[in-house]
Amino acid sequence: MDTLVDFNKLWDYNDPVATETKFKDLIPAAEQSGDLSYKLQLKTQIARCMSLQRKFEDAHQLLDEVEQELNEDLKIATIRYHLEKGRTFNSANDKGRAEEQFQWAINLSTEAGEDFYLVDALHMFAIIKESEEALHYNLEAVNVAEKSEDPRAKKWLGSLYNNIGWTYHDMKMFDKSLQLFLKAEEWHKEFGSERSYGIARWCVAKGMRMVQRIDEALEILQTLEVEGKTDGYTYEELGECYLIKGNKGKANDYFFKAYELLSQDKWLMENEAKRMARLKELSSK
Image (cartoon, rainbow, N blue to C red; front, side, top):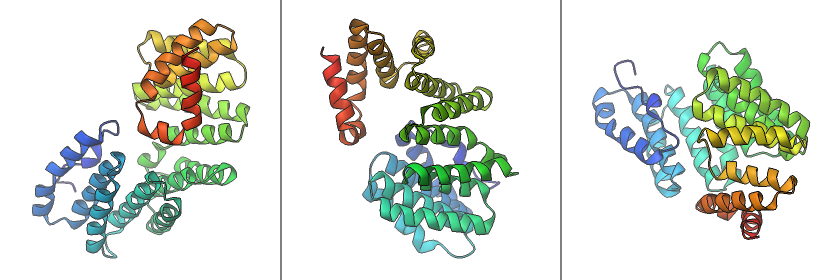
């Protein structure tokens, strides 16, 4: 891969359509290079772009083509095949088959000593689990990342702290949840992007609201708003804070903005129906 474009650096997870085009443009060079591992790894990431666009059939078809060319020597390509096969199943809510693929990725990454992919597989395994099981796999992923000598594995820590925070949140352990959100915020401030740091700050605000530190939560959210780092989730959280403080006028305004943006998200409308119905009701009062 040294003489070929490092396609991993071309990823824009917020724009899978553009990323897919960039990756497909590299296919001719990959074919000509004779580097089978590179070509198959590239194709797994094209499949991931398709999955992010909910083109599950296309993603599975491409991954099935990858599978036909895999062999025992192509360890990284094989691990990435299982990861993307699992992610595609998971995105389509087929948790059973996703779990099987992620387990393969965990086993193969462990055998190959590939900490980066092992952490990825563990964190995906945690995503399909609930409560204590999710916490177990996330903590295992943190343990691997913190001990690893691979700097790529350590880059997972910000996401993992955040994931663990949400696991505690779902378990209604809000004090612990906030502790992890604060840890994630600190990590993203030092190592993350401007966007990831903004998301981490939003999580802290959410965590503070859950432990009734409303004024502190509002201070963070208002700062994000002034900085122009607002989206439907920020407006939703502002609405919740103002609702608690009894300012129904402001709460209504923010809930209206939140619903206007979040209702455009097909996944939210399908999978968070009660939440969206409540948001719509609050935005109309």
